Amino acid sequence: MIGGPGLRAGERWEDHDLVFATRYGGPIERTEDWKVWKTILRQAGRDVQVHDARHTAATLLIEQGVNIRVVQEVLGHTRVTTTERYAHVSTPLMRAAGERPASALWGKP
Image 1: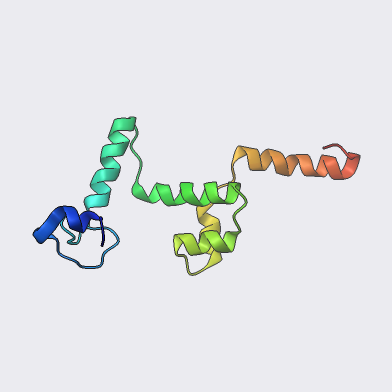
Image 2: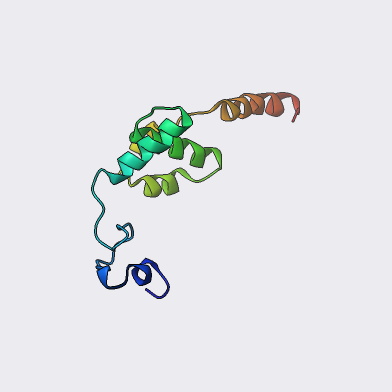
């Protein structure tokens, strides 16, 4: 890796071809992301589960108009019905859905 973290680690670099690695190229501890997540939440004055982020991601992607099948792939779900349970309907989407019948019936935008 030219100019990457391996260069800074020098001879201590262990190339395991990992996407997420320690500063020396080795595998991170399986709880490391959880520890970082909790630190960020503590700084923000919040406390939610890592799993909650999956629901938030699904909801935000759907709100942005991303196709449910794409959201399914992003979250790694085998069935789209699982993805549908993850995506929650937000107030702006509910409002937009409520305005459509009025537009269809009375031609109001």
